[in-house]
Image (cartoon, rainbow, N blue to C red):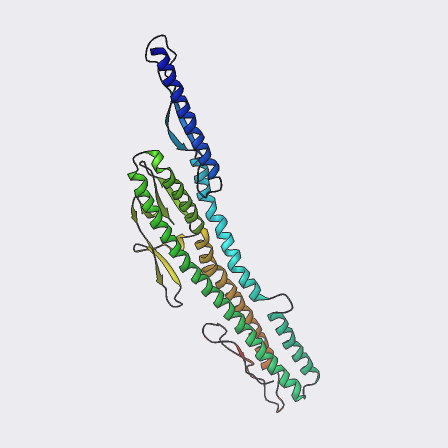
Length: 336
């Protein structure tokens, strides 16, 4: 009778274990498209026999664990910021590209009309209409340079607005990840913390899309996160928010963690991409545009000063200086 009861108990435990395994399989299938969800697996253990001469007492469930590859997750957190940085740069610079216009329909077309007007005046130097055409086209050249500089400035301001918005998103994710550290640490078993760990993994992935992060697993579960050159933003349940300060003279956003300026340390993620566009790419384009304006104005002024007006007086300055757009715009004001 005892052997029969033992066999029945063994069969019952086996059925319970397999039923539990089917429940876990159903959970995996149901969450196949759930962001952050890691496939579960059931850990089974063989029960030792109660007495000599018996095979054992069947099987029992030890627990459930998530099938995660920490190496792959670390690689993901390291590679995602570079990918999203390039995507952010492409997004911002596509607007700049549209501002530049196609060859033959941008500043080059305005300059061509201006030089054609001068060529027509050279053929008929006494023509009042040709002189007026040179002045009108000179003003159009100046306006084209000012307009392009204004578009660059608008693109820089748009990138700065993106930076401020992303910082708000970063701080929101940091707070949510830290709160999950508390939930995971307070869980009475690993099984009870699996859903919180899945959610936390997804949030860390989203954070790594916004900013380059370094993630360190905590012994009791959860993560510590730092940004830039090892500046901590999450330590256990404690968070250190990224603060935005307005720089002078243009009022661009600078980023601080505590009292440390970390703006130059953020090089990846969408935040790093927009910072590079704002602080490197657009200023470079503006500098090149300014150099072009300076060269055009200097060469035209040199040639114009070597000529004479209708009364025989030497030509004056055609374009006024300076040519730095944020100080004083270029304008065509000379006499032909």
